[in-house]
Image (cartoon, rainbow, N blue to C red; front, side, top):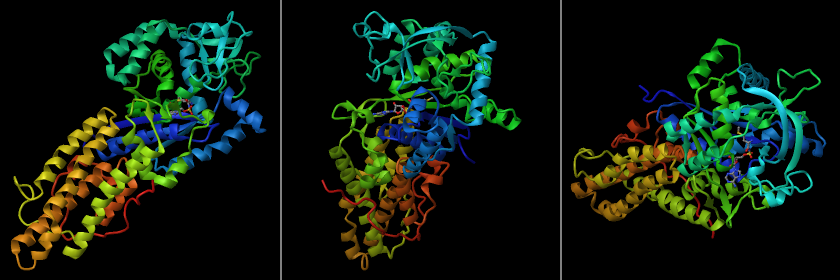
Length: 540
Ligand code: MSP
C-alpha cells in the first residue's frame, strides 16, 4: 500500500534558452528536484516539469546577432540545459520546449478561449518595454526623472534589471487584466498559502491595490512567436507576447490542448499544480497575470507559488551580465554533485536572498559532509569490519524497549519524519537538513561515549561486553540507514551509495519513507562494505 497516492505536480520556470544554465537557474531547479524526490519517497504520484522558454524578441535578436535562424539557435542551445540537469541529478519528468507543436496548439486554444469570452480586445500600446526581461513597464513604475517627458528622447532603465528600455508604439491585442483585480485580492485573502513567502504576497497585494492595467498580449513586429490565431495569415498578423506563451507551458506539459481522451484525462487529474517554483523577480507574472489568465479561461488556479530569493556574491545579485557568475560545472568539479546540492539548500534559507562564497562552501563541505556524515560512515563501517566480520550484528534483546541500548538515537530518529515533513511543507530545506544533522551528530557522540573499541577488547571473554558491542554498532548502523533515507532527496547518489554498502535497496526508490524509517528494521547479517570516504576533505 502506498500512502498519499495523489498527484503532485510541480514546476520550475522555463528558462530562456539564450543563456547557458547558471547557478541561479540551477538553484531553482535543484530545490524543485529535492521536493520532487521527497514527495515521491512519501508516495505521491509526482510529475516534475522544467523546460525552455524559446520565443520572443530577446531570442530573435540573439539568434540574428549570432547568424542563425531562431529555430537553429534554440536547437543548438537546448542540449546544454539537459546536460546540466543530468549532471546535477535533476529527476524531471517533462522537459517542455515552447517551440513544440503541442505547445503552439495549447497556446492557440487558450488564446481562443479568452478571445471568445470577450477577454481580449484590440487597442494600441505606447510605452516602455524591457527586452532582456521581456516585460512592459507602466510610467508609474519608472523613475520619472529618467523618463524625461515620457517619450523616446530620454531612455529610462528597467526598474528590475537596470538595462535600457525600448520605446514601443504599436497596435496590439490586450487582455482585460484590470477586470480581475478584485478577484485576485479575494483569491489571496481566501488562500494565503497561494503565494509564499508572506513578504512576496504583501508586495503582490500592494501592487494589485495600486491598480492593474490591461496587458498587451501580442507583438506586431516580433516574428519569432506563436501566431495569434485570429490574425494568422492576415496583413495584421501578430505573435503572442512571450510571457503569455510561456506561462501556458505549465498546461501543455500535462495534456492541455491535445485532442485525445488520454491527454484530457491526464490534464483533469494533474491540474491544478501543487506548486510553481519561481524566483522573486518573476512573481508578478506568476501571481497576477497567470491566475487572471486561468480564471478568465475557466481553469482552476495553482495551489501555490513559492518565490525564492536571489543568490548574492559579495552582496550583489549574481548574474552573467555582472560577470560574477560561476558555472554549475566549476562547482561540481570541486564539491561533487551532492556536495553542491547540499551547500545551496543548507546554507541559503529558501525564500530569502542568500550570500554564497567559496569560504562558506568549503566550511560546509568539510564540516557537515566530510567530518560529520562522511566520518561517521567510515569509522563505523571500519569498526563493523574489524569487530563483526563485516556484517550487521544481531541486536541482543529488543531495540524498541524503553531505555534499550541506542535509545538516544532511536528517540531522535522517531521524531525525524514529522519534523522533516513539516519543514518540507514550509519549503524549509535548510531546516530539514538541520534536523537530520541532529541525528548525524548524535550518532558521532554516541560512538565516542560508548567506545566500541573498549568493548571489543573484552568481547571474547565477557558476554555482556559482547552484547553491548553488538547493540552499539547495530544502533549506530541503524542511525546511518535512517540518515541515508532522509538525506536521499538532497544527496541521492550518496544516500544510495550508503544503502548499497549496507546491502540495502536504494533510498531513492522508497515510496513510504515514514514506514521505512521506523527504527529497528536493518537486517542482521547484511554485509557492510567500508568503501572509500564519501567526501574527500577540501583544501582551504
Ligand atoms: N523565461 C522566464 C520564465 C518563464 S516561466 C513561465 C525566465 N527565465 S530565466 O532564464 O531568466 O530564469 C529565471 C529564473 O532563474 C528565475 O526564477 C530567476 O529568479 C532565477 N535566477 C536568475 N538569477 C538568479 C540568482 N542570482 N539567484 C537565484 N535565482 C535567480 O525568467
